[in-house]
Length: 151
Ligand code: HEC
Figure (spheres, rainbow, N blue to C red):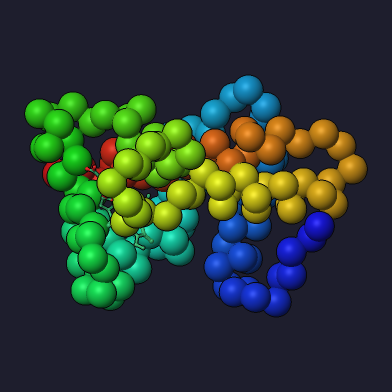
């Protein structure tokens, strides 16, 4: 099923642009770091800033009404004794492997959304598309961007 483009058009256009950028990257070769940071930033502003704030400080407009406050994303390394925990951050953003016995987590499960969106994008493409890799690429770009904004 192809999801309607008419809903949330600006956000979807951004997603489609980022996905196409990833899809044109040589398979098996990651985007260089500067491109990942640029892509991650676009993705961040579109999907994360509302809660975490444009600068990552946890002061986005939506933060006020959340029961769980978003964390300051510029201080992740500081919270992990100076080491940026790439894998853990990747897991938190993807969210599909997170078990949450104590009720709702404050973070949306981005892995599912990126997977769905990669599926609908791949629908119209006349050759094989590695849907998991597309979804993973978006999360990886976000992780690289977050690593770049650590204080
Ligand atoms: C609906 C609000 C909301 C949105 C949108 C959101 N987050 Fe979060 N995020 C939270 C909250 C609340 C937490 C606090 C932890 C929790 O859920 O228990 C959090 C935690 C995190 C953490 C863990 C930080 C740490 O030090 O443990 C990371 C990383 C993160 N978010 C990244 C992102 C990224 C990247 C996006 C965009 C793709 C995003 N968030 C979008 C609300 C949000």
